[in-house]
Structure formats: C-alpha cells, structure tokens
Image (cartoon, rainbow, N blue to C red; front, side):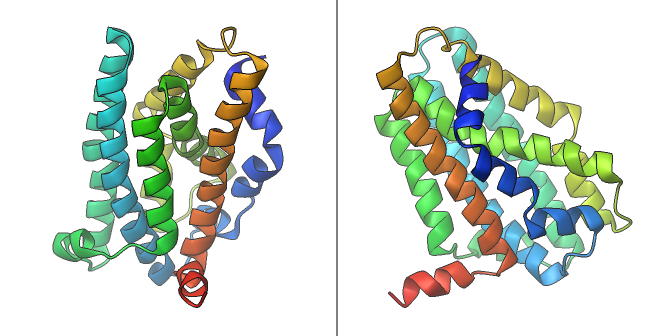
Length: 226
C-alpha cells in the first residue's frame, strides 16, 4: 500500500466527509447561494496567496532537482491557473480585484495557512508533501466526482468544476501524489506517525474550511466569542 493510500485509509471518515459536505454538493447542483460562494472565493483567494508562499519554501528546501522543479511548476500553476479562476469568477459576480485583494480572512483560514507555513519552515520534505496533499488531491477528486454527477447550468459553478477536474489540475495533483508515494518504503512506523499527524491536521482544516464557507464565517464568530 502506498503512503498516500495509507494516509487516506487512516483518516477515511474525515476524507469521505468532505465529499458529502453540503457546500460541495451545492456546487455540483448549482444551487449554492452566490453570497456563500463569494465568501468562499474570498477566503480561498487569501489561502492561495499563502499557499503560494508554502510552495516557494518547499521548492527551496527540495532535496533534488526534479522535486524543486515540481514545486516551482506547482507555484506557477497556483498563482496563474487557479487564482485566475477566483479573479474571473469574482469579477463576473461584481467583486473587483481590489476587493478580493483586501479581504480580511477568518481565524479559521489564518490558522490553516499558518499551520502550512509552519510545517514548510520546520518540517522535512515528506511532511511538507503530506500537508499539501489533502487540499490539492481532494480538490481534484471533488472536481471529478461532481463532473461525473452531471454539470450544473450556472456558469460560475460549472467553471469551478471544469477547473478542478481539468487535465492541468489533475497533472499537478497526480505528481504530488507520485512524489509523496516515493517515500512509501523509506518511512518507518515512528516517522509515519508524524506524517499522519501532519496529514490529519491539514485534512481537518480542509473539512473545517468547507464548513466555514457554508456558514459564511460562523466559525470565526465562535472563535471570537471565546
């Protein structure tokens, strides 16, 4: 069993919960309220900006040229192909680039990105790959899952599904999985525990991110009252 398969199996309840989340399913049906979608895009745009910093750090720390090139390609794809979807969609929904850039993220999104940046600085390359895998690979799986169920009529949701089920996005996600799985045989039980801990935390943040978007920042309000 590959390292990625083992990680998903160990955290299958959380992993599967993402695919049944009402926000995800609403994108597929095309009945998600635009207000929720705009909130999600603003949060995700901030996330992607910080995600790009993580990829830059990962490229600098990569032990070999192939992995270094991959992270550089990953960074370019995120900042152009993926972030352009957010800019284009928000503009079509009446949200300017300036408003998108000025968005103040919720505590949940800040916590998630801070975790990824901390892992990039302090972790080794396997931990970094494990921290990135839940986001990148689950989005590709979600994109394919929703596309197979049938495309919604509303263009903004169709565009999201087309982007994340695309060959371009799938190529990056597959290469990330491939690099992670190269460490399958060299990871012992003790090291796996640490990698699984990183993966689990990142995966939980992914699920919370969807919930935070569905509730339009309710998680932020809960945190602020404590």
